[in-house]
Image (cartoon, rainbow, N blue to C red; front, top):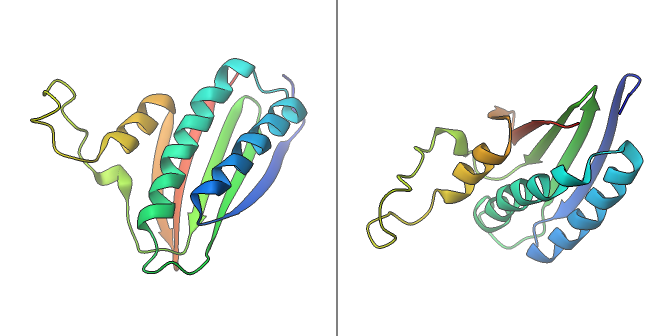
Length: 142
């Protein structure tokens, strides 16, 4: 999977859960275009769906239509995905990992999504740039 320089693509979705279908189609085309191993696509899709679901349901104060930008960059074998939204400031990476050894009834609600994302990705980071939340996910492919 040799790449010359950095490849870049952007997908813009609306804050509607039905938009996740567009993500699946986009990842399929990206897999073919950038020759991403098929074995990594389910992990990438699951991590992005978890992150986007949280943005769609919790980032915005009202139900007005908003844009969520996804930037994909491939440099050598490192795929970087940046999710940007102008919702409420929220850094999911500061959330303490849940104790997955607790029984379901003893475990607090929430927190499994970002925990799962951290398990699937090689690196997860957050920053607030002006009025934008930016969640960056990185994974080595190939």
